[in-house]
Every structure is written in structure tokens, then in C-alpha cells.
Length: 358
Image (cartoon, rainbow, N blue to C red; front, side):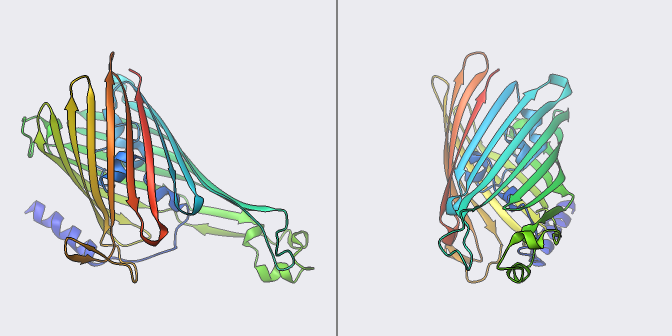
């Protein structure tokens, strides 16, 4: 009865989606920062367990052992670069602390106006960054919680904004579908809320009405100093609820299947699906093949895709591969790659490297 009630709530929320496109700022916070998670369709809230967990679910930091570093890099659309760095250290019974930083660089473009069609000599640039300090801990062997304190900064030419946010998450491990009767091998349930905080406050000369500038001596900015305007924008709040299980598990291979339900404040609700196949080889080598589908249920005008003979409103298929090499003294190094097509905007590849030092 309880499961039926939960399923009904999910169905009702999906059936009553609200669309608020273009109503939030700092939307780079919605772009995934881990190749493993992205290649699994971003259905990762219940699987987070490494140094990159702070983005998806800070509770996953509780499962980090030792000291880990992670670096991610991708060339986003239209020349945008997206880089992320993360570090986490396990403090034993005191939990795990982590530092996470991401940079979203839009590049630069020469400025032109009506009087200077070939350029004014000034370059337009934009850059957004976010940094967080996170903590995760297990209360018992089957329950973990985590939290992140985050600062977000946005610089768009002459305008700047800053905001602060809080991320919260939990992970529950159960005996359901466990082939070993061990909770760590059974079904996991994860939940997180991301970017709950203050509004982005934009200040700067760029917010002045262009007509006001043109009417002040041919666009001389000096004549409109003091006429700055302030604008407030919400952050992209995201609520994630997901589950995962391992239908295949033995000493050599493992198959993981996951599903997430997303409820954002700037778009419709959607579903993400993911899977990962791991195969271990002699010598400490592990190969992973991953695939997923994300954004099922997001409605965008004139954009549909045929998937398994079903015409869905919108979706993005994702693929990826990973390799991990186990080293002596609990050390390891891994590299993950993901690929996704985002329609008319093109294709995006993400590369992530993780280092476990002890």
C-alpha cells in the first residue's frame, strides 16, 4: 500500500508538470560533472560513492575510503569550456569532507555597436564558477547523509552576481534484490535537493536599457554611470529521487540498473535511466561499459525523438566507457569517458580522471 501511494505521487507530479523556461540563473549548475554519472543518463543519486559525489548527492561522500582527487573537463557547445576539480578525504568515524570547484567559461567575443561595426577594441566575456565544502557520514551501515555549502559567482561582461546555496542528501541501502544478503549489494535508494539558497543578484552597467545609452551622446557609458539596475534570479533548484540495484553480481562481473525522478523549479519533471556493466580482469584491471537515457518527459516544442518505436517528447541518449587500475596499498587510478547528443546544439564529450592515493 505504501509503495502504491509513492508511485501515485510520482505519477501525479509527472502528469501535472509546470514549465518555467528561462526563469533561473546559473544554469550551468544543471550540467553534470562526472563522466560515469553522465554516461548512465545522470541516474546517479542512489549510486554516488566517490570524490565526485558532492554534485549528485553529498551523502555519497560517506562511502569514500582514503584520499581521492577527481578532475573533469569538457568542451560544451559553442566553444564553452567546463572544468571541475574535487578532493575528498575519509576521516574514519568522523565522516568524509570534500572540496569541489567548477568553472564554466563562455570565452570572449569582440564588441561591436552601430558606430563600430568592425569592433570597439573591447571584448565581451562571461564566466561562472561554483565552489562548495561538503560533508558526508554513515550513521549506520545502511544509512548515509550529507550536506554541501556552496557559493556561486557569475560575471557577464560588466555585470556580476553572487549567491549561496545548500545541498542535502541521503542514501539508504536495503536487502531487496541482494544476491548476497548484504545490504551493500542490494537495492539502494537516494534522495537529494540541490541549490537551495539565495537569489542571484545582478548589478552592473549591462542592465541599463540600451535606448538610454544611445540617447546619451552616441553610447558613451560615462553618461549613464549611476543608472545601474539590479535584477534578482532564482537558482536552478533540483529535487532528485532514485533507486538502483544489481541484477548480476559475482567476483568477475557486475551489472547495475538505475532510475531517477527529477523535479526542477525551471522545467517539467522527468525520468533518467542508466546502466553499467563492469568486468574485472586479472592484474587489477576493470573495464566498464555504460549507457543511459535522460530527460524522458521534458516537453520542448517541435523536438521529439523515436526511441524503441515510441515517439517521446524529448530525450538524450548517453554512452560511456571506463577503466580502473588497482594499485598496491589501496591506491587506484581511473579514467572515464562519456558522450551525449543534445540535439541541434551538437554533441558533447566529457572526460574524468580519479586518483585514489590511499
